[in-house]
Structures are given as C-alpha cells and as structure tokens.
Length: 332
Ligand code: UT7
Image (cartoon, rainbow, N blue to C red):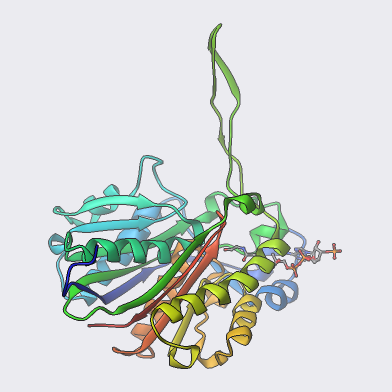
C-alpha cells in the first residue's frame, strides 16, 4: 500500500559496455550472413561482447557506481540493490557480488529475472518498496551477458544479441514521478523464446533418479516474437499512459527495449509517436536484454537530450513471454 507523501524519483543513471565490438562484417566470418541483411532487417551494425574478464558483476557494478554518483549518493546510502538479469555469474544470485564490489554495505541485494522486460519489471518492483516507505534509496540494474548463451552457429539468433549493463537510482521524493505502469505475462507462449535447462537422467540409487544437466543455448521463433511485440507493446503503453492520465501526445521520449529497429518503427507508427522521440542505440549495441532500456536512457541523459521533468515511457518485452510499460518523469 502506498504511504501518503512517499513518491518515487529517478535521480541518476549509469551504464557500462564491454570493450570489444564485433561488427556485422566480422559476424559474416562466423555464420553465413551479411552486413546488408542484418542492418536492413534489424538496424544492428555491431554488438559489444564481454571478454572472460568482463563479468556480469563487473559490468553491473560499473553501471551502478555511475548511477549512484549522478544521484549524488554514496554506495553506503543504498538500501536495496535489484539486479534484473537472465545471465547471472552465479545461479544463486549475482546482486550480492555487485553489493560487495561497490561497497554498498547496508544494502539488501537480490536478482530479478524477467528477460528483456527485467528493467521495467524491476522499476515497478523497486517503486513498491519506496511507496510503502520501506526503503529510500534503491539501485536498479539491468544487465545481461547473453553472448555466453547464444548459439554462435545459428544465424537467426546470434546476429541479434550483445552484452551490457545499465542502472538507475530511485529515491523517495515528495512528488511521485512514477505516473503509471502496466505489466503482463503469458506463459502459454513461453516456447517462442527460451534459454532452457535440459536435464540428463542421473540415477543416484535404485529408487531415485534426478535430472542433472545444463542450460541449452537460446532458441527463438523470431517471426512470432516480432508479431507479439508489434501487437502487444502499443497496447501496454496505451494502458500505462491511461493509468497516468496522459496520452501519446504527452510523451517526450519513448524508450523501447532495443530489439529491432523495425519493431521500434512499427510501435512508433501504431502509437503515432514521431521517430525523433524514439531513442535508439541498436546500431552500436544490438539487443542487450535487461540492459537495453537503462543503457539507452543513460546515453540520452548524459548527452543532455533527456531533461528533468520530461515525460518518458519505457517499455520492455521478451521471453516469458513478458511485457510491460512504465511512465515516469526524469529527475526530482
Ligand atoms: O528481446 C526480444 C528478442 N527477440 C526479438 O525481438 C526478435 C524479433 N524478431 C526479429 O527481430 C526478426 O524476426 C529477425 C530479425 C530475427 C528475423 O527477421 P525476419 O524478417 O523475420 O526473417 P526470417 O526469419 O523470416 O528469415 C527470412 C530469410 C530466411 O531465408 P528463406 O527461408 O526466406 O530462404 C532465413 O533463413 O532470411 C534468412 N536468414 C538470414 N539470412 C542472412 C535468417 N537469418 C539470417 C541472417 N543472414 N542472419
């Protein structure tokens, strides 16, 4: 339940990307594809890929530190670290490693998994802790290293994904800057996009057999995911705007999950939001899953394009299937 007078403000952002880039021409040495095919179908020109020394923890920590600094806080001011990821360094959770790395000694830390919707689901989750008066300063990180789980022999998927991290700081505020949101899940369509655990039978004793296997690389039905995104994302954005008592005319910036430029264009067309309000950094990073929205947000904030008080709509969609949108104003 929301406590009277406890609003949420998003007061800082940060991001991090691996040093190495792999462009479409180089990808053509790995699978049968071309820069022309990838760029025209997706808008992607290159993706950044993590070296073995660049872990989910190091990328997430770098993004979190930058966001905390922008908010004018110290790591010890942070009450909660939420790490949205599908590619943990440790299946038991990676948020605690980030907590140790940045010295946020007071913070509770845990992971949240909602694939490419992770940042938007995390934003809404974090806001609940502030609205109820439980926590005052929260770092939300969206970070993924999907390159670990891509099938690098499958040209239908390996061209899409890249690695990165983005973070924001949410703070308790007199005025509530989270204006509306809508989250959705549909597990009946789960099979369209998976990073599946595959059990191998292992008999321990005569009467007990367990499934002791590993995760398989990403599989995706691209056309179905594409159709889902173009239909469902505009709906959820309209619903979130309705809850905020706003219309698409009130939107200053649309921050869509950076999956495919054609999806960004189609969603913009359906909502009649002009292209200049739809941020895109796909060409440089590809699809970085939970990182894509905070990464592009941080770039636009640091460029001075996104200004305090402007109205932003963030919308994520992907595996689960999950999708959602949040409407908020930048800054206090
Ligand atoms: O975070 C959410 C994650 N996922 C997404 O957002 C994915 C959404 N889907 C998409 O972005 C698109 O479906 C893709 C970019 C994945 C594929 O684009 P498409 O226009 O749906 O292509 P397609 O799968 O229909 O393939 C068209 C042709 C096929 O050849 P044939 O059967 O027509 O001869 C493919 O074999 O293109 C071929 N193809 C390629 N050719 C060159 C597929 N991948 C490649 C490739 N290079 N990398």
